[in-house]
Image (cartoon, rainbow, N blue to C red; front, side, top):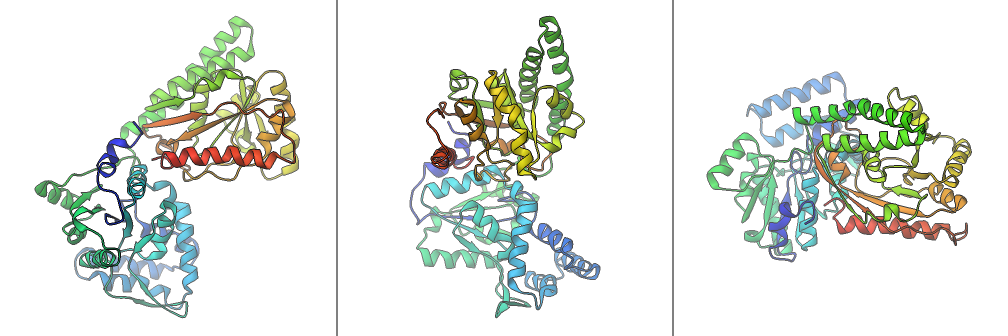
Length: 478
């Protein structure tokens, strides 16, 4: 059973084909939080909003919330500040706001739902009261073709400060869905709509499969009365007390792990054995404390040929714990120079022989890798992320060549490890770990004995292609 199979079973057991529509709201449905808030934060940071602009926006928001202003008037009031601005400026702002504030807030469960509908050949659409500047980056990230939204008036690439009516809100959303239905010959009785808000009731009533997600109190009551299935996702947004306590246990387990490792090292007069025990004990305790259910496919490949260069797709700070749990012994790693000065991990990493590289200075980075080659030749494996940095989404980034050069120089194989769903537990920028099932696919060792500089790019491309293939098979964490 795949990670989200129970969640997507209804979709995958239903009818296939583009006649089935799958309509998704944006805020609090596809991701935790509000795109307008992220957009405003970006504009404030860019200096495009004055204190007066913020005050006017707050007044309009309050008036709309109290029912004293309609949605179209509300959008007109809050978008007036963009009058005379190039549309391209808002497009860039939307992409920037998504990357900074929203990319890591996409619900893994919603990503899985979208992917399931896409796999079934359904017509998937985002239908949102937000503007396309807020919604476009989300649609692009999730591969959603159809996007229906509230339009701001643009003339010759310049915003006029007016809104195009009707807006995509309330009955306007239902009308937008009818328009898409007519153009694509959809069967609304077989179609789905996902949203968190009771304001979307007209569209809920239009489809045969209304599916409230993270519903407001009022929508939850309506769903209960009408017996609509409700789902709530807690993988993003405000962490629970349990999440905070589990995260504390991860760090709390470090001290006793160091103590056990030190004792074993002293008894055996072996520094390497001390770090082997320390790392494996902490990996076991920390992953269990965090509520991580780690499932490894191809575990035998971890032991077939050592020493080796183990590579992995880098999405989360949690991978360090998982690699300690999986590899157990006789390996070291490569870390960014900044970690050398970390008060907790810096001293441990230095003592364990971790190689620190300055990513801002290529020449120094290459020079610093010398000890890593020597470690490999002395029988110690190496762990490295070829992407060089963490990704905010499941998409695999470009591979740098350092890990592959090291393997060639030391004459050892490459062992690829493909992590799936680590973002579910701890996305980039997050501080609190959430419980999750994490899957790791270990591929067979890849010999580098016949590699040369002329063919290196081809070898790297093939290995990276396997990462892409495996993640696509799982729906990129789905």
